[in-house]
Length: 197
Image 1 (tube, one colour):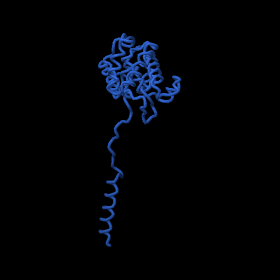
Image 2: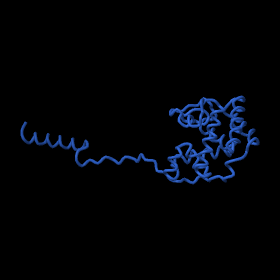
Image 3: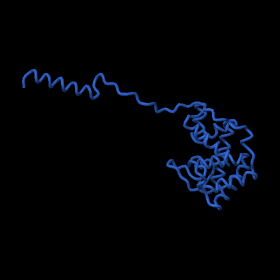
Image 4: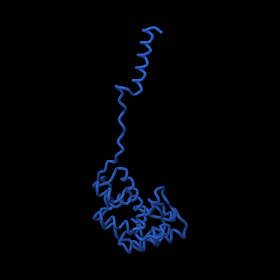
C-alpha cells in the first residue's frame, strides 16, 4: 500500500470515528425528568363542602357504588363510608369520590406499590392508622376517612391540596407549595365524581 492510499484510509477512519461521538459531536438535550410543582387552580369547593351529608347521602352513595359492586358490597361500603364520615365530620360523598377514583370500590384492590383496599392505603399509612386488615371494608373505609380528614386539617380546609396530598404525599405538597400538573387531573377527577354522586 502506497503512502497516498494509507493517508486516504487514515482520513476515512478518523472521519468515521468522529461521526460516532468524537470531538465536535453534541448529543441532543435530554428532556427534564424533574416534576415542576406549582399551585394549579382547580375550582376549590366551598369549605361547607367538607362536612355534612350524613345519612341523607347514603342512598345516592349506594346507588353510585352499585355501578361497580354487587348489592351486598355496595350496601356494606356505603354504610361504612357514611358511619366513619360522621365520626370524622367529613362529607361522605367526598370520601366516596376519593375511593371511587382510587379503587372503583374494589375492597381487594392492590397496586404495584402495595397500596391496598378501598382507599389504596400504603402499608405504612395503614399501620399508622391501626388498620390490621386493609382489605376489610370497614377498617379501610375508617382509615381512608380518618387519613383524608387529617390531610384536610393539615391544609387548612383546602380540599384540592388535601386530595393532592393523598396522591403525592402531604410532605411533597407542603414542600413545593402546591402540586404538579399531573396531579391536577387526579384532583379534578375526584371533584367531578363528587358531583355525580
